[in-house]
Image (tube, rainbow, N blue to C red; front, top):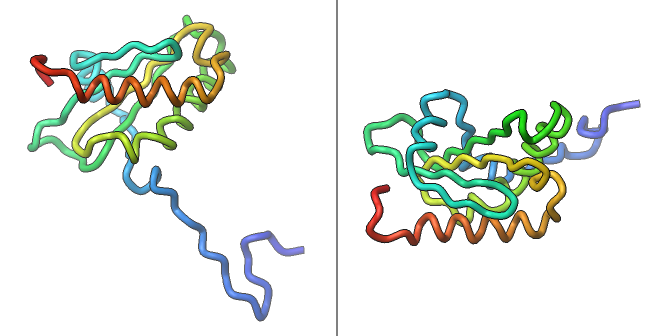
Amino acid sequence: MTPPDVPVEGQQAKATPTSAAQSCLSVLKKRADFLGASRARRQGTAGFLLQARQRAPDENGTGIRVGFTCSKKVGNAVTRNRAKRRLRAIAAALLPRLGHTGWDYVLVGRPGVTVDRPFDALLSDLEQAVSAIHNQRGRKP
């Protein structure tokens, strides 16, 4: 028995498509990046909190960077991981299209809501939050 992605003799290898989300989104890992986003613009939604900041031109990284966090208030480890998986899924679905290059976005899970809220509602929450973040006038970026 051969693994499914190994080509059988006489067949061509299947190309594994890379999603647009993987190619233009990078993940925030450093605490300083999360702290920078927490001091910048915020937009609360029913399902999560979105924090966003525009990076300075001399900062490292290109494209859109995104981070995810859930505190212990969200629940035990299983619940927190599920909430982060759902946040990753909505970010991968919408941020390549709606996000702005040169911006950092952090999605913060909410207790009892991020896990239980319908997925379609989370998607619309992110659409509204990103548009509200970028349409803020008269505020510091």
